[in-house]
Length: 270
Image 1: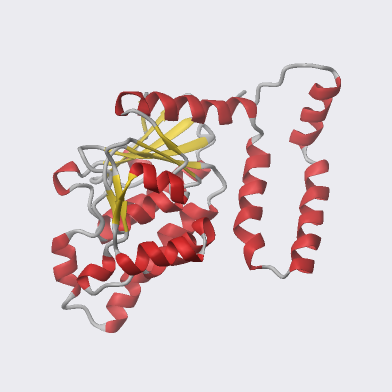
Image 2: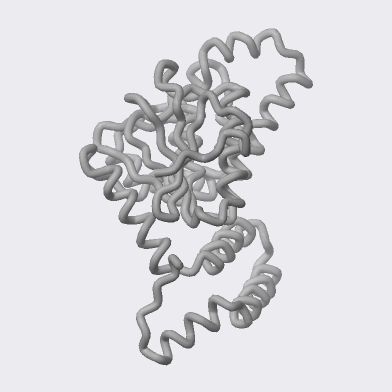
């Protein structure tokens, strides 16, 4: 596994970026603070995702964390600091987090969450924003902001799209913390696997996407999934037809159809 040259991302204190067989691993590396979020952590995450998006060696991204907890949400010290902020400073800070969530959601590469421990508040938001999420039976999930007089504002946009209004209201208005099996039932995560098998399951799933799927097709499909929900029906149909036509003339489509017609096994990771 090769470490990314730090000079290309500035010096990272809280995040690590590694590449293994076309998989870009972005690792929250603040275990002593339960990988809690503050402005600096968000900045480094934005830098790492921007780098991974442009990294030609990376085809699929895995977001994971060190320590016992995936991410405990906002750093308590940072929350105290926010109390002294004025409105404009708070708006800038909220916009900073919003930009990270939007960046991950619209990234041109698939993002897989490897959630090995509790994901709470903003940490649950990070898990929510991933295209796929694997977790372990012991992990707990929750948007607990209402319990401290705060709002789960930014994540609500993405959560509504992901699991619908009924479940979103239930989670956000109660602030309840739920176990992994309930998170799976609600659609927050895709897979629950034993802790000892988590990393291997994520790796094999990511490699399958790298080998079996066109990166170009996954990028376009992810773009469609982000844009279609807000479009009126007729606009969305016209948009889908244009995307379909564009795909037919792409190099990947020509290659894929040729392999299909020639009954050749196609490997995309080359």
